[in-house]
Structure formats: C-alpha cells, structure tokens
Image 1 (spheres, one colour):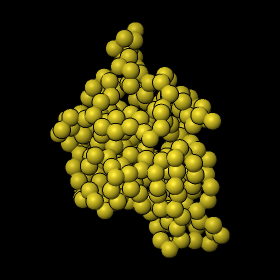
Image 2: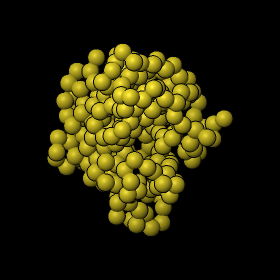
Image 3: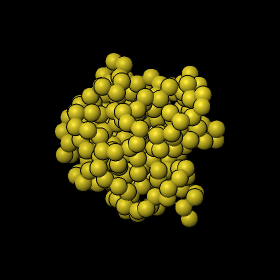
Image 4: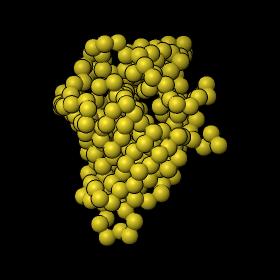
Length: 247
C-alpha cells in the first residue's frame, strides 16, 4: 500500500497533510518499530531510525512509493550524482542529499541535479520540493521562475501557470523565467514573504504575495540535520506543526 497525496497533484488534502506530518514524526523519532500492526502502514524505506548527518557515500535517507534516478528504480543504496535526474511518481516521496544540499521531494515531481556545485542550477520541471542549501551561489529553475539563492531554505511548487516560492530563511532573488529583469529580492527569517511567480506575460504584477502552505519547520530541521546543519531558529519538539502554530 502506497501513501498518496491526493488525486490532484497540485493540491494536498487535509487528510493527506495529517498523514504526511504523522509519518514524519514517526520517522524522526524512530517509532515505526514500536507500533503494533506497523506492517499495515505504507511502505517506508529509511537509512537510519534517528536523523543524523548522512554518511559519506550515501545519498538517500528515506523514500516511499515509486522513485527513479535517471529513469531506473532507486533504493537506499542508490547514489545521486551531479547531472542526475530524480523523479517521484504518484504516491512517492524522497528525502536525499547531494552537494551538501538536502531535499524533500513530494509525489509527481522531477528534479535535475546540476553538474557543478558552485553556480549550478537545480531544475524542478514539475511538482514540489523543500530544499536547504550550503552557503554558496545556486539557482532553482522551474518552467516559470528563476530563484537565485545562497545558503537558503526554500520551498518550491512548480505548476504550469505559476510557481510558488517560500523563502523559509535567507535571501532569494525571484524572477519570471522569461524576464529576469523583472525581479524581487526576498530576505526572510521565518517564512516571511511567500510569493507566486506567474507565467502570464500580460499580468500587471507577475510576482505576487502568496500564503504559507504545504511545508513546516520540522521538515526543514530534518533535512538540515542530514547535512550537519540546523535551522537558524529553534524548532519546537514534538509532533510537527505548520507555520500557523508559530505566531
């Protein structure tokens, strides 16, 4: 049985959100083995019970569902290298590390890894990804947006008509992919200024305010831990909560 995030790949239902947060909590506390009837839970594959910095030579921390690297099925032993294409299918999720950067990819997502660490571009052709980056100049590109970042936590959703970008912390420069001269620099301490970047060239304002959605601080702390870092703010212990819990 696979964990699914809803039939509409651009939406996460309340039930799916609760399941996602519950599974993350179990993963971060190593509680899977202690649950009665855990064999009935969705198949989750993880490299270690308690999150810690990923060992040298390992890329994948946890996955569920259909995952491929360069079109081939992936597992915990798969190494993700510069230039690779990573993809999650319906119901898939992947947490992995490359270049001292860490990612949580949701279902129905595709990402191409840059061939170089400095000045490289991560291409998110579709789907959703939460990312944390080492302190160097990097870009994320979607079909509708370019996000220039340095040592930043950022959540991106790539849709045909727009991209959603939350600069969770750090500095990011946002621009439409077809018009880099129309840009906005966002400086954020804690999810301060999420934005939509529109594909519509005729829109009066192509970089628009957006709500906080579909990611949380516990997820950021988890993936920062995998690369030996932490978030720049204290994350409360216990069951993960959305930004709405941190007034």
